[in-house]
Figure 1 (cartoon, rainbow, N blue to C red):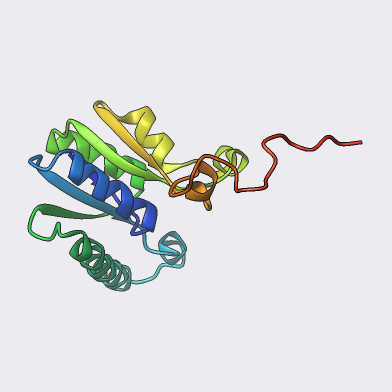
Figure 2: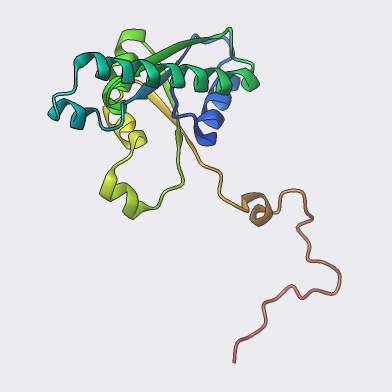
Length: 168
């Protein structure tokens, strides 16, 4: 199983769910990172050593964030950590092929349709490009438990009307 993560709560939720659904499956946790302004540094003829130093720093920060994410989930010893430089959808496809994963488990941020149409979505790319099953775990909606009635009686409170009042 491959679990691409961006260290968000949504990614942690997807990872935790996938680990519970397949407790015996091999688990590879992937974080793809890019160095901010790396292309601008290249255009400005920055020394390769400076670019490499920036990549090392980004990788170290990602490694630290990965450990911080895995520790509370209890997946520290089970997970193979993959930290790869580059465009996330491409790295996900490559890691899926290399690992022979039969499932990609990925979190879905709660963005609107318009935002996804304009800027794209790593989740959509994973769905379109995957050669195996993809488990997409949506972001929890604010107030979902309240709206669904979780933890409450389905009957209206005493004295409440079971019908909606008419509008005039």
